[in-house]
Amino acid sequence: MGRPKIVCLCGSTRFYDEFQQANYAETMSGHIVVSVGFYPRHEGSKFAHPTIVEKQKLDVLHMHKIDLSERVHFINKAGYIGESTTRELAYSVFTHKEHSWYDQVAGEQFMIRNRHMLGAMIAVMADNADPSRWHAKQPHNKLTTWERLLEIWNGRDLDRCETCELAARLRSQGETATCETHPEP
Image (cartoon, rainbow, N blue to C red):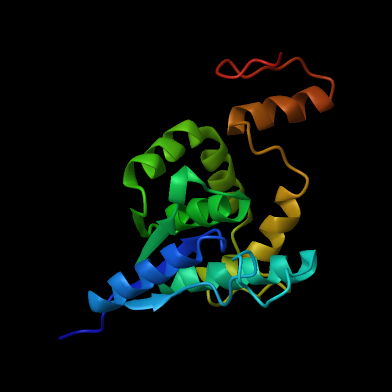
C-alpha cells in the first residue's frame, strides 16, 4: 500500500460544520486531510478575525497546502464561493489538481459563470510564476509566487479576460482597442 492521497479542504470558514463533515468523510476514506487552521467566521469561534496582513499570510499558507495535495475539495454550501476560495480554485486549476465539491452542481456552474475571471487569474499566475519552482538553478525571488500574485490582484480587474486586459493596456497607451467578447460599455 502506497502513501494515502492528500486532500486539501477549501472554502469559507463560516462553514465549520461542513468542514468537519468533509474532514471526517475524507479521513474515513483513508485520505490525509489538510485544511484551514481555525474558523474565525464560525458563530461560536473564540478566535478574532485576522488583520488584512494576517489574512494575506494565511491565504499564502493555504496555497502551500494546495501544493501538497493531489485533490482539492471545495466547501461551497449554498453555492457560496468567496474571493479567497476563488483564488484557491484558480490556483488548483493552474497546478492541475483534482477537484471535488460539497455541492457539485453549484461548483460546476460557478466555474462556467466565472470562466473569464478564472482564466484571467490563471493567466496572471502563468505570467508571474516563480521560476525557481521549475528551474532549481535560478535564484529564488524574495516574494513567493502567491505574495506577488496578491500584490498584482490588488490592482487588477479580474472580471475581464486576457483580451480585455490587453485592450485596456493598449487604450492606456492611446491606442484604439476593444475585446470582441466583452466590449466596453
